[in-house]
Amino acid sequence: MMALGIDCVEHPELIAQSAGVCRSAGWFWQTDGLNRWADAGDFDGVCDLVNLERKTPTVGDSNGYADRLALYESSRKMLL
Image 1 (cartoon, rainbow, N blue to C red):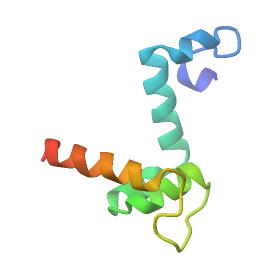
Image 2 (image 1 turned 30 degrees about the vertical axis):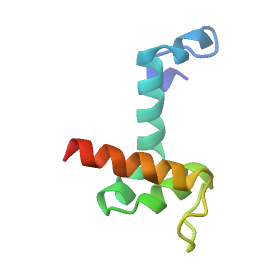
Image 3 (image 1 turned 120 degrees about the vertical axis):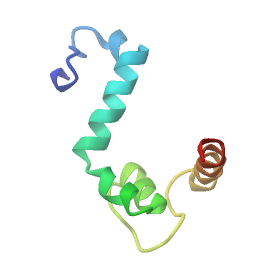
Image 4 (image 1 turned 135 degrees about the vertical axis):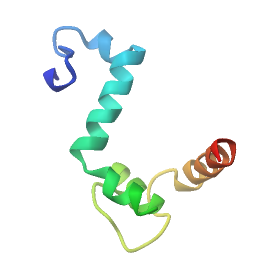
């Protein structure tokens, strides 16, 4: 994936290193327009788009939602 500045085809091991992991996550976030949902405070919307590839009307229906929500809430408490 040259969009990351990493040739993941020729050197797939690079995507597993810290810089590759961060770049790939940022690329995914940007490409899928997740800021729109995050800026609106729609945690469920972000989870839906990551796990289900679409926003659904049901809250909490994405894979691992309860665990992810608990980690999110814990992280927010530590950061705020």
